[in-house]
Length: 345
Image (cartoon, rainbow, N blue to C red; front, side, top):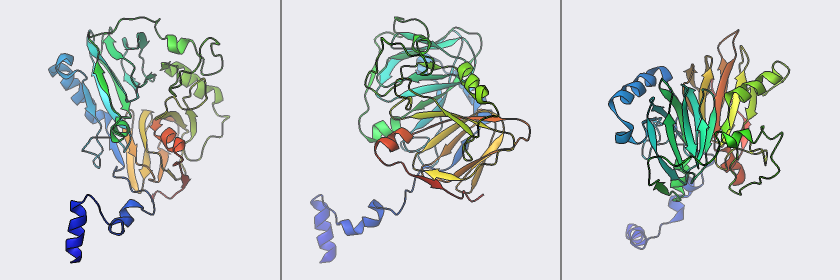
């Protein structure tokens, strides 16, 4: 009779909590995402191949998704975030569209392209961080003479899980240019001198459209050898909203890390899921006992609550890492937790 009773419950759209209790309330988080490294040297030739064999009119966005082996359906890089490598060739344009997912681009290679965000052309150069907040029109134009490649990042895994995703295509291929180039970044000097006539728009997105590598490098150089830094993340600086001093987007926080020569970091874990791209240098990140060796422009996935530590393999050269995570979401929901940990190295 007991089996019949359970079957009857299923037909009524109900289920016995006692059969699922351990899965619904685990002792600690268990991510489906796996520690993983995507090799720039291996993927770049494929990007170049598809740039020659597949037009943007055929693909709309010519992107290689970085799909975590544990998150293949639907594809994601870590549980709440996505990363992809996008390429655009000289003379090409990419169709204007918008979506509720927040996005940004971290430029890896090339010169002469710009992305237009709500009428503002935002130029691209290696090391630049360009923001595309949710529901902002955006398209791409390349006027340079060599391929332009950047890391795409979006929070669509989170937005889609919340069933809050919307998408719309612009009626023309490109939107009109209605603002001065890089105006969103020229009006701010990283929160030190803010225009008095502007106020926050209430979305939680930074008004800075382009955080240039020039200013990021200047910030790192300004503290040089005088900063103590973190024993876990090295000399870590956060890209911030000049109005609030908080993260650049309500769902994504971005940081730049300088690991001094010979850096051998302490282990740490936190509930935030993290994606890392290597700006320069060679080293390794050990994640739950998995040693991920990396070099320039490789991408690393660190699942939430996985213990990690960074190692700079060079005895004479800095390593620089760019990272982004869903920490703002975890903090806003009261779910952020962190503690020291042994990555098993």
